[in-house]
Amino acid sequence: MPLIIYKSHDGSTQEVHAEVGTSIMQAAVDNGIDGILGECGGCCSCATCHCYIDPAWVAKAGEPDSTETDMLDCVLEPQETSRLSCQVIITDEMDGIIIAMPESQY
Image (cartoon, rainbow, N blue to C red; front, side):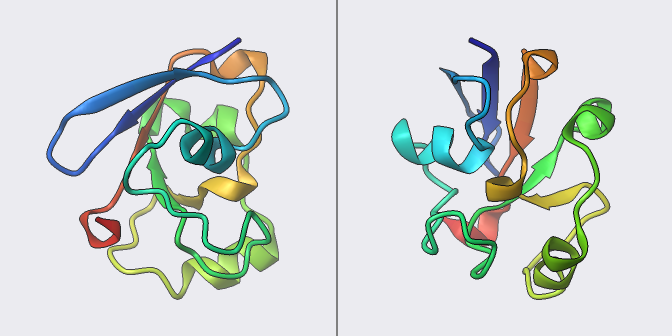
């Protein structure tokens, strides 16, 4: 199972092994990671799972579709690597990916 590293706004990290095919959001919620709420349950309709993909991993995470891009217009503290973690599906190639969370979700 790939290792996902969640980094909070204060720099602390939590590591989680997650099953391939699970979303970054679901892995966070299942493991009690603060900063990723996922209030809509992964339907891409609330943006409470906003995260930043570490720049070294952006290509592995893929590109957001138009629905996700529209939702990203609503987030606080957007960055170039902003994604909704409910839309990033874990693959074997993501072993070691670093996901940072914005301070606004704490």
